[in-house]
Length: 244
Image 1: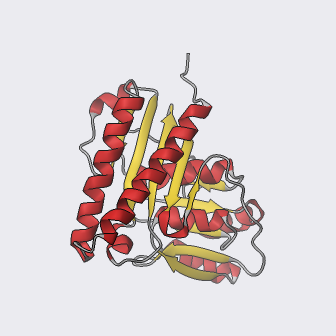
Image 2: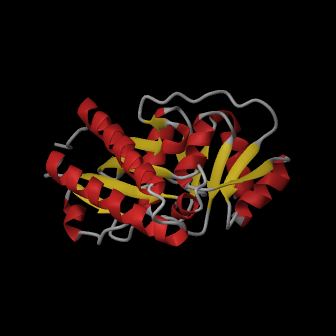
């Protein structure tokens, strides 16, 4: 019988993301680190916090973190927590606001429970998030450093505006908030980059998939999952057609 999630999983995910975010703000506010050193310290502390907390509260579940060695034992488990202790390390090190903490639970490869904390915005999104309307012309969020060619092609076809932003979680939650119609990424991500944002966005009624429209599957032996689309349902068909 497939293990199911419970309300307590969602509560735990949100609490962990919130508290990890508070730790990251506290580290930054010490003034003892800056730039890459700040990002490195933040990654290490947030990872240790999440790893120890999940080992205590969900000892039977699998665990995968960007900052830890992948444990092959997780592949035999149906329930696996997938975390990015600090998504947007560069932005955090630059003291920008567009970074996030990701905590997700994948069950049988599907992103079921998710929490995305954005400490500098004072908000943590979970499975109860509700998407807001997004008026005006189509806006597509892309990476600050490597906007994908597919997104550029789609923007040209749809007369859309490309908007650069940091963290994958920050971009996906901006779509949830109604600040943009879509987030498109290609060319390099891992499961921890998208699992929590995908769970939150899907719960909020948004479309989530890979660039070719196929589903996002998690807890694979190779965690490389390079592309992602998060978009509002009203632009899904025309956006996906333009991305092909």
